[in-house]
Length: 433
Image 1 (cartoon, rainbow, N blue to C red):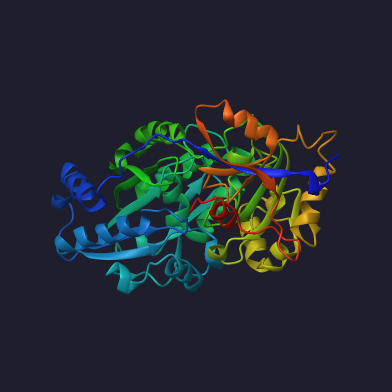
Image 2 (cartoon, one colour):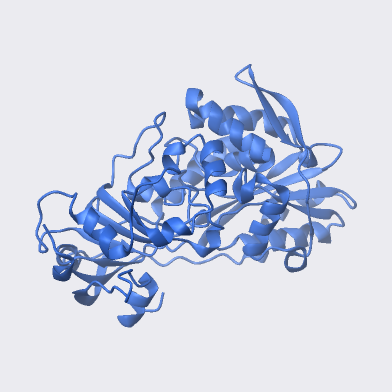
C-alpha cells in the first residue's frame, strides 16, 4: 500500500490538433441566408431563442448574434431559459443561472421570458401526458430557434444523445418536460423517449430549426450550422459522430485513482462527465465499456454550479469542503427529476483531501508507489493538462500524443491538508491554464 508521503505527481499535456474557431456572427449570417430565414421571419413577429445552463464557451456570442439577426429582420427576439430543472426549476432561478453565465437583457440586447406556463400538447407512448411552455406555442410565439451543443449525453448511449432534439424536449418542455423525459426513460430508454417526445413537440411548436454547436478537444467552438426543423432527426446522428472525434477524454483506458478538483452543472449535466470517468450509474441504461477507473475522488463543487452537486454519488470519496458546499434541496430536486438518485447520494466523506486520497489508495488493491496509476484533473471538461503518478509519467514519455512538462514532485497539500487547486499546481510548473 502507498503512503502519501511517497507519492509524486508530474504535469503532462495532451497534444490536441489545432482547429479554427468560426467567426460566429458571420457564420450565423451565412446560415440564415442558406436556410432562407429572412423569407420566413417577418417584421413584428415574436421569435423565441433558447439558452441553456451549460458552460458552453460560445453560447453568449451565439445567442447575442441571433438576437441581432432577428432584430435586423424587424422581428422581436425573446430569450427562453431552457434548462429543465436547473436553477431549482423556477423561472427566477433559471434567470439567475443565465445571469451568472453573463446573459442578461442588457448584455444580450433582448427581453427574457420571465414566466413559465406549462401546457399539455399530447401523449407519449399513448399514455404519458407531454407538456411544453406555452410561451413557445402558436399565439405566443411565431417562431422558435433552438440552440444546442451536440455531444455525448451523460445518461445513455445511442444514435442521438445530447443536442437539438434534447433541447426541444428539456428546453421547451422545461421542468415538466425534463421530468417526463427522465421518468419515461426508465421504461422506454432515453433514446426512444427523446425521439417520441421531440416528434410531438416539433409538430406542435413553430420551430424553425436549431443552431447546432460542435466543440473541439479544448471545448472551443469548431463547427456551427443551422439545421431546419424537418432535418434535425436525420442530421443529428452525424453531428454526434462528428463531436465524438474531438471530445475531451482521458489518455488512458484504465486508472487506479482519478482525482478531480471540481464537479458542477456548468461542467457536465451529471456534474462529472460520465463518459470521461466511465460511470453512468443508471440501472436502466448500459454502462460505458471504458475507461475503467477503480476509485474517483472529488474535492470541491464548482463555484459556477450554484451548489447543485448532482454527480456526488459518482464518487467513491469526497471532502468535507465539498459536502458543505452542496445545496441539498437543489441537488435533491435535480436527482429526482433526472430519476437518478444514485447521482445525488453521498459517498464516503473525509475531513480533508489527504484523508480522501488515502481512502482511495487503501481500496484499490495491492500496489506500490512505482506502479500506482493515478491522475489529477481540474474537471472532466478541461482535460488538456493532467498531473500524473510516476507510472503514468513514464507512459507519457513514450506517447507521441502527450508532452511531459514537469517531473513528478510531492502532492501539494496546504496547511489544512487539502489539495491546492489544480491551476495553482500547474502555475507552479510554469503553465497557466
